[in-house]
Length: 201
Image (cartoon, rainbow, N blue to C red; front, side):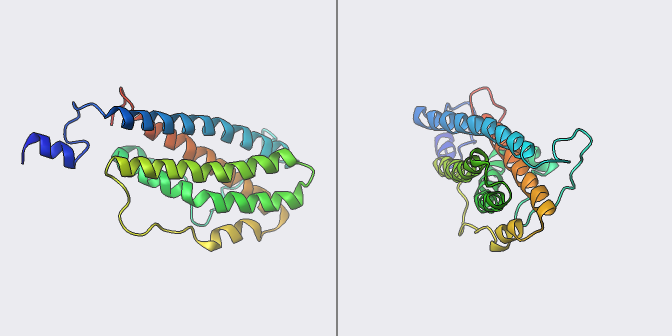
């Protein structure tokens, strides 16, 4: 197989070959979206904490890290994976987040009905996670690294677990979901940055 044929089959076969202009533009656009949404996620988390009352927001409060069905934080080994594999994991997490955020929004509508801005932020976050996840998947397809096989659907139990709890556990679980949303957006932003010129992918 010639060098040229190898580079066509494997986008990383020849790292000296520049990305096509339209592909580089797509990477920049998706990275910019992830960067913007990471900022929004930080604002969402801060507002969520402010509206939950004591002990949330107190410096001494250390909430339990409740497990979230269908989603976990990025593993310590995430950074050591190839960038395409990291982006596949990012896309899977972004696909799992919307039903969880929707469930948190419904619970907060009961607990904080007079907090329309928080509810709007949660609704926006679910839509934004879907949009960024779709953009990452489209980018993977353009790179020839799309997931093979049917896309896994987030388990229905995940969303129901986020809403079928008592008041305090529901608030803690909502905090955990908002925190995971911020973590995965930040991770996605960093992973996309590896594909930009000057990145280490």
